[in-house]
Length: 246
Image (cartoon, rainbow, N blue to C red; front, top):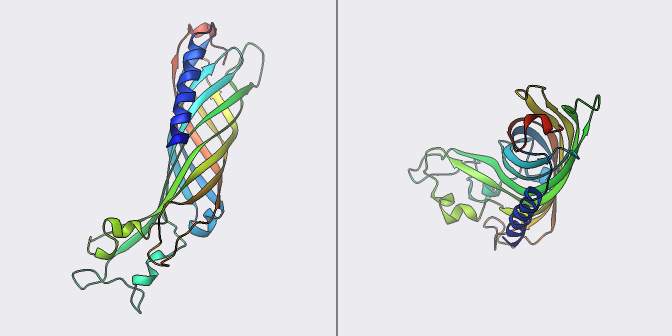
């Protein structure tokens, strides 16, 4: 919570200072979607997953600099760990309260939240700054866990707080980088970006004990993910159209 509060205060303060300066500016809302490959400790728990989110940014047209926040929802279907093995029978099934087999679908769920700074390096003539190489770097908070979808809601073993003991909820700080291409058409009707993302999380379990192992997991984790994402940008120009150098 302290890290999140610091990021919000830093971002709002930066915007206040920036808006007080005489410079061409715009606000961009990047709505994005991508695919991520896990690495490090994260690859032991999950397979390939996806991300969707939004990046609100303040853009400085004169120097092609931007300052923004990033929100990502992480989701996937491939879970490699099975914390529920301890409550399965000899056939590998879980008996529900109706004495029939419960249908449980484990899923990957997560979030990232942070701030970033970056720069656009224009490609083309000096009078046409509508496209270019975009690079950024930032940091924030990463969270991920195993979510158990009980199709018929019959598995009392994982309902409510019982499920929390199996879900491997993990939280920590993370760094992220983006390298890609950004395009803004002359008439400002076509705006998109696409590129590669890299994330390095330094996390640990927040559960007091894992129910399946009856042990505390206090390991320091390095959760990596890298992938490709595309985004559509909704712009709000704060200067006259002719004065934004983008």
